Image 1 (cartoon, rainbow, N blue to C red):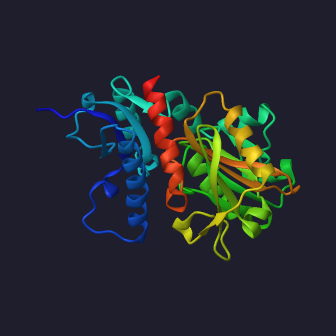
Image 2 (cartoon, rainbow, N blue to C red):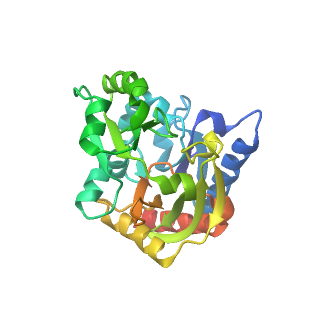
Amino acid sequence: MDTYYDIVILTDSRYENPEKTNWYIDQVLLEDGLVQKALEATGLKVIRKDWACKDFDWTKTKYAIFRTTWDYFDRFKEFFTWFEKTRKIVQFINVPEIIYWNLDKHYLSDLDKLGLNIPPTHFIEKGEQQSLRNLFERTHWQKAVLKPAIAGAARETFLIDVKDFEKFEGDLQRLLANETMLFQEFQHQIQSNGEMSLMMIGGKYTHAVLKKAKSGDFRVQDDFGGSVEAYEASNDEIAFAERAITTCPYTPLYGRVDIFYDNNNELALGELELIEPELWFRNHPDAATKLAESVYKYIQQ
């Protein structure tokens, strides 16, 4: 007899049934396990699958929730072929409109136009004739970050000083041939004081972490040796994160708002993570319960 599921928790092949684990994979399994147990506690029938699994029949589930699909940004073409096909069969959480909007960092420009503070940013469109020399001359910045509009885990991200920008010119031209890039003014306080990640479930704040880069680096991801610690967000920081969520053109069921204090010491948005954000449920298991309750309520509508 075929088994039907209410919802599939989406992961990638590295984390579905690993033969060997390490501290990082153990965290992934713990996080997904907390979500699965919380969803099952609501009475839903749940399975966890690699999004690219060739043997799973997607007609056997009604919903799917993105969690640890952290290889998709290295497999964009394959991922979107699968996504376009599967979205006709399965209802995704967050919904596809959110996925498409949040995938491309042009969303930062949308939020900026709606009054949300973001770091000074120039978008350099794919194929555009542009140079780092011209960008630094136009902006008068001393340091800038160059990164793709569609990426994750700090892929192809560079910190560039105006004094030696020439050695990165080839990288800009190489990348522009295939994708849109962002040129952002470097924000010193991220390097010195870190970046706060506020977890948002059903539009409401649940908990936060502080991410700091290792000495000599500017990337706060633990992939690059960054540290993560529990953090008590201030009322102003929570209000900023809630505003970021409500300013979205769509309403996400869950997400993460990465914020920092900019070069003017004002709160600013670094990223809005609405596709497959790490949510540090291991620090705050009650948030997994709140996510499950929000999903259950959404499904029952």
